[in-house]
Length: 119
Length: 107
Image (cartoon, rainbow over all chains, first blue to last red; front, side, top):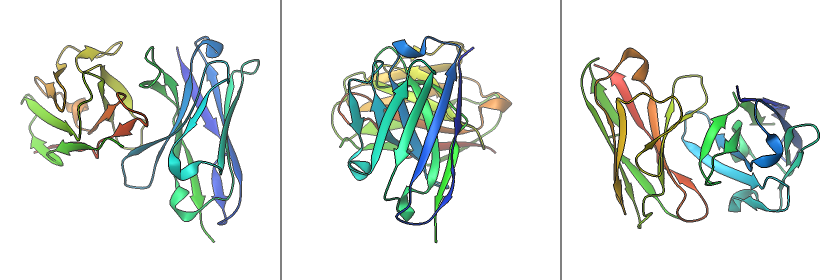
């Protein structure tokens, strides 16, 4: 069965950096695009970033452009989100999610990793 | 960005009742609308994609309809495990956006 397991969350000061990882199993990781979606405490869902199956295409929501990078290692079945220049409004649970056939729906999700940006 | 407005914000119903949730888009999204269910402390899960297609393993009591700007998620007879928050999401225009959610609570 499909499993996505995030790690790397924690507490970081404003302006700091953090890298999230998402270990994938149960499907052919190298064949599917992957996303990061976040949810601020008590709030709704916000799409953050996408990377194509081979890493050749990347997209970001406007608020994280220039601060976040997305990458993947298909040999390790792992997705990453490098977050720099973190701000208080980046505080959220970050989910990795697998693309469905269309690429822009999310058919499997990890359990989430909490990132708290606070001094 | 396309804005998705969900109504009502909260729906109070009893098990066995029918639930009707609405999602309205600020411009046409054709049929490129999905629905997700999120239970407390859990990640969301895909229910419906492209307006009316049930995702793998989703029971038949969940159905989606609509096109253009107006969409509906219907749960024909609420089971105890269906009390949760439901989000709609469009993939018609980049970036993909979500609605604010409808909470279905036990009356």
